[in-house]
Each structure stands twice: as C-alpha cells, then as structure tokens.
Amino acid sequence: GKHVSATVDNSSVNTIYSFSYVNPYYTLDGISRGFSAFYRDTNTTAAIVNIAEFSSTSYGAGVDYGFPINEYDRWSLGARYENTSLQTTTNTPQSYIDFLNQNSSTFDIIRLTAGWTHDTRNRAILADRGMYTDLSAELAVPGGGLAFYTLNYHELGYIPLNKDITLYLNGQGSYGDGYDGTTGLPFFFNGCAGCLQRVRGFKVNSLGPKDGLNR
Image 1: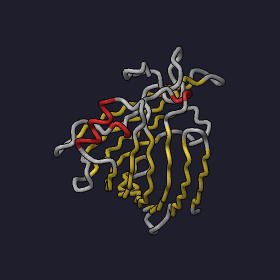
Image 2: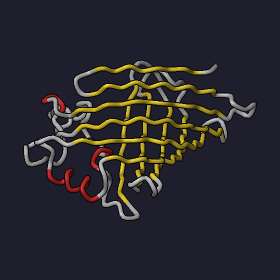
Image 3: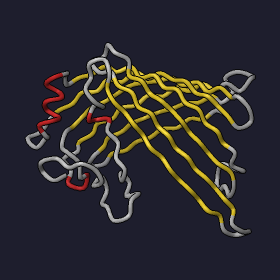
Image 4: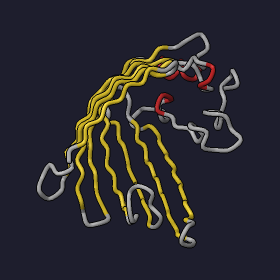
C-alpha cells in the first residue's frame, strides 16, 4: 500500500519538520512515485555536537521515481529543490567564512539523484542470508550558486554460519567535490565517519580534521 510519514524533531541542535508520501505502485508495472517536503533549522553551537560552529535554515521539496528491473534490481531517479541560508558566529572557522564570502550565504539548490539497488536478502527485516547493495549519485546543477556532486556506496551482507549464528557485514563510503567554479564540497554538506558513534573509541563527530578550536 501507500506509505505516509511525518517527522518532528525539536532538539538543542536541530528543529526538523518533514513529510513524505510514496505510492509503490504508481503504475501497474511497479513504478513508484514519492513526494517529500521538509524544513530544518540547525545550530551547531551546542557543546555536545563537537563540530565547527555555524547555523543554517533550510526548506525544500522533492519527487522520486523507482523503476523495477527484475526481482533483485531497481533503479531510482529524483529531483529536489532546496533553499539554504547560513549564519556565522564569533567561533565560526575562517575557512567557512571565506567560503561564504566567495559565494553567498543563501543558496537555491536543485539536486538531481540517481541510484541502483541490488537486494538478495531473504527478508527485509531480521534477514539472515543474502546481500544488499546501494549505489547512488547526486548532482547539484549550476545556477543556484553552488555546483557539486556526491557518490555514495552502501553494502550489507548476511552470511549464515550455522542455524543460530549469522555473520553480519556492513560497509559504506561517500565521495564529493565541487565543479563549475565551486571549490570543494560545501562545508554544510560534509559527512563524517563517526556521526552516530559508529567507530569505537571516538566521541560523536570527533573523527576527522579539527578546526582552530580543536573541534
């Protein structure tokens, strides 16, 4: 059936309101179509965040289509408009301030996405055998003040060792850069390796290059 979801997040770092709707059988052939809209206000000055200080306000909407190829493979295409405004603080790193001085503090970004998934898991929840591969690319088209791209990879593996034990493997990686006059990936789209304390021995958001204030 159709999927409808809504999110409300009101924390010391983020205020997020989002809504999405997906019709998995937009056509009789199994082509899906989904719509989404969001509003997000982010303030990284909270000490628990452990990242360089800045604040941003974003809102936008998008549409996505999914195309089944066979029992295991699926393609996806999408487009999203996003408006982002950024503000600095007295502790914002100079490199961030230089980026905004060279470009702007408000951006209208149109992002195009494409992806491919290959799923041979025996079930989506509590799988115990099979593989899941997700490859995706995103392109911010020129004209909104920024032009950049990202490439993403995610792999899951479930290998049964015996009747009761399954070996679980999880790997992911991303790469992004600017083009057409945009130098590097914009800092407010940066990812991190330990965002949710995924790496043992590192505090949240602490794995990566540090700014002048040792964050």
